[in-house]
Figure 1 (spheres, one colour):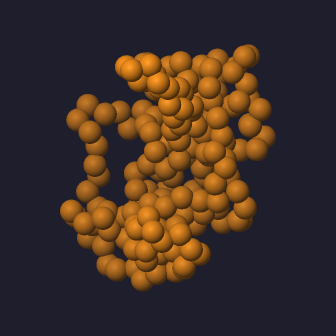
Figure 2 (tube, rainbow, N blue to C red):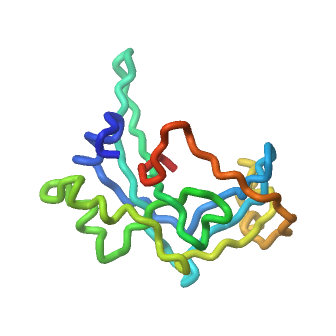
Length: 167
């Protein structure tokens, strides 16, 4: 990740935390989107995802603020659903992650690791979560889990499984 030009400056100067109560992920089933899951901390509460912020300058001179949640390989508890997951920064490491003055990117890379295998729980939900018009609490109600075919691991040609990507 440190070698990618699109991340290099933001990783050095503009690290951020994104508070969240969980995230959605779809277990792939062939060409279809598959079974959606609400993935949340087993203990409840809010977690902080590692993020980067950057200002994009358009050729016409206008600027747009952008942000990206960083992902890492999935832990053993999530890997059956998807091969990536957001990198969670633990509360004790907030200051270290955000300290861009004294903490070089190489000094905080160890924080970009999967959460422990028992940190999250995956709750199957209905496909209501797949429609932007649905914003109520019903999208997090437990849904039916349909039998899923064996998942084929997707990887871009030449990709390194330890390489950080955008969420």
